[in-house]
Length: 153
Image 1 (cartoon, helix red, strand yellow):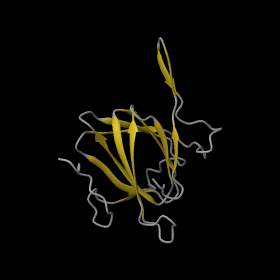
Image 2 (tube, one colour; image 1 turned 60 degrees about the vertical axis):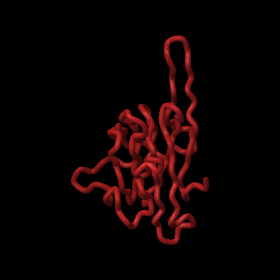
Image 3 (cartoon, rainbow, N blue to C red; image 1 turned 45 degrees about the horizontal axis):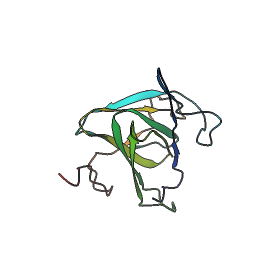
């Protein structure tokens, strides 16, 4: 799959031992790292959609730590070499991955399967409660060429 301009992926390594496992999610010596502002976890119930939004300044760094998430990106940036392109990722326990999302790229996610999914984000900007850097669109916005419904229902 051709990635939207600015999007980066890193397959994460699970290091198991007899006690459990360890998985690094983001390191300052990785090329995906820009800067750290905060971290938070977001959860989505099966059958619901946390979509769509984008940021004007903020880069997001997503890692799904519980369940499986379908994360969809859409590039509506005028003049971008990947303008109009969709990227679909299946992140989670079966595919531990760091997904870096650039500013101005629409994104959203849903839980896959019958369990909630949880994503940890390491954004580059602090959340500003008085003036959030988030532009929201409805999950079924007709300007975004994506249908969240499962294709084989």
